Image 1 (cartoon, rainbow, N blue to C red):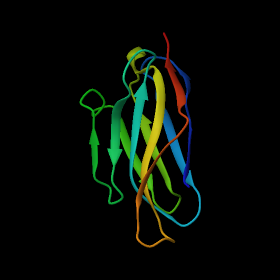
Image 2 (cartoon, rainbow, N blue to C red):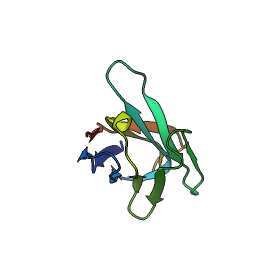
Image 3 (cartoon, rainbow, N blue to C red):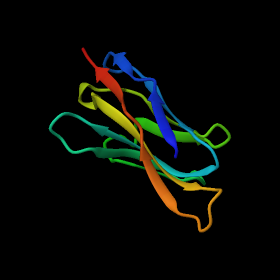
Image 4 (cartoon, rainbow, N blue to C red):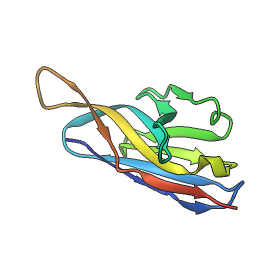
Length: 123
């Protein structure tokens, strides 16, 4: 089993920046695509950004010019750099990852969610 732990959220003023981290831990796994999602109460969880193991990225249109997703495969960690934050960015941000157990045959793809980290952009 892979555990995902988000960190880096908090309170920031409009126009400010935050960097979120998603650390994957476990044993004998290969981390594939990692995505950042966000959700506000009463709304659907929405994709923010996604990155493949090879570094290909995609973003929601409203974030693509302000947010940057990256990863460090050696650390099994993904990041979300958020700049020019707006009050409407306030949400719980979740990390999601596809992964494969590397000690079983046949290989089976799995998926895990983190617990989320609160980002509040307040004027």
